Length: 174
Ligand code: ATP
Ligand code: MG
Image (tube, rainbow, N blue to C red):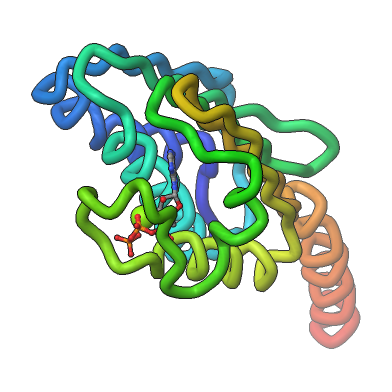
């Protein structure tokens, strides 16, 4: 879809503010103010960011801290989500994107272990990358990089095509 990516993400992130408030979590959100019009599959983007933020809120105890940073560089969207939650042991990290995988020590949390498997699948479909780093008892950080097609670039050929049509029409009427 044609969308202002920046506005879309701003609204999506804002929808987590009440959850942050009720869980007494400091929720920091930074992103540029300029619109970024693009052709983008926002359904997939919404599922990815919602899953990552939901995990951050689930695995971060009360009075914790979650930071989401959104940026754009070289036609790539960069989303960083950092939490001060329970963290993931290094040995478990390679498995967290597997379907139905849940860290054993986390079995007092609800879920089925499907969220990150879906995230990985969607990131692959969007030809992006996702990386995770974590420290047990300290927190977890995900970095998502997704390429996008800015709309200015796409509109050029369309304008040229319309001009050609106009020239043809004037020849016909002459
Ligand atoms: P579901 O997403 O299906 O509700 P889930 O959240 O348990 O269940 P995933 O989102 O796939 O499953 O995450 C897999 C596992 O990775 C989690 O069970 C948890 O052990 C670990 N994990 C994911 N995100 C975090 C995080 N931010 N902090 C700590 N552990 C995490
Ligand atoms: Mg999840």
